[in-house]
Length: 68
Length: 260
Image (tube, rainbow over all chains, first blue to last red; front, side):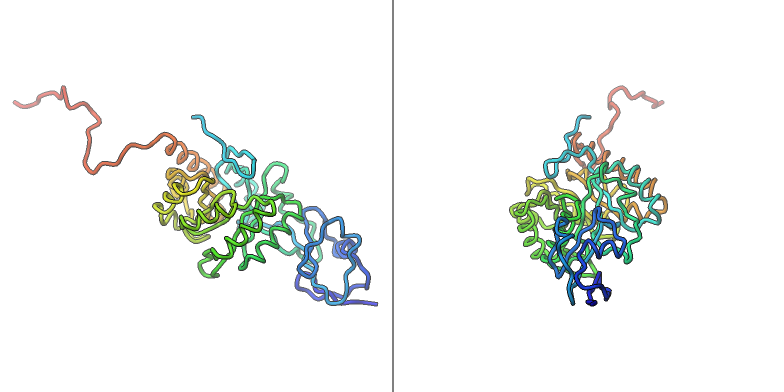
């Protein structure tokens, strides 16, 4: 079964039950200096393995970039 | 000459120049410019990662062990957005020192002072070292200090404008009004602007575009390092008073008589 998420503004189909850890692996995103929010709530890194993503979830994955 | 350090969030910094990491033509130019600036605090933005991940990171260029990273909340138009961005930065492992921006208008990038004050209160209460980018209003500076800001950062001129210190008198009044460090943030265009801010008695200067958009950013970074140092020394040494008419530097006595 698949669910549809919005990740950084892009619509994405993933397998139901995927965790944040699973999503980061799938998208090849390094954990270091990365932060994740699901439906506006910031997820502590310690919960990446337990938080499962579901239909309609809005995920933001951010990192530091150049800025003033 | 002996000088005290700039103290922010209980940390000591010997450099009074804070630089940004935006708008550089390449990572290598950025790395060299930041090195040349002598800055110890470097600002970064918090943005969405590219999908799929590229594996590239600004922190491969700017060593977080060497520099104190200062995440900003640029692009946030409400206190709520700015607060959430600071929490994200903290969760990302960037520490608790934040450059707080709550923007009120896209064309001028002037701050929304109401939102800024609200966000400062919340973040200071939650243990952040809040460095708010504000307008050059002494009343707002005092309110930000009372709300728990670790310093105040009045603008010299609009962000990225390079117009210099437009209202040095307000900056002076801010310096007399608050007890926290005063850091001019935004508006610096060239070295003399940075020197003016420091000569006024400011504790530091934060800039990005003035270095990044110079034709030779590495040379401009050196100019800024020297200007901040020169301005600071001039301030500490106590400049002479201004006079309308001339006062001769050479003795008036003993001038040879050439009359025939």
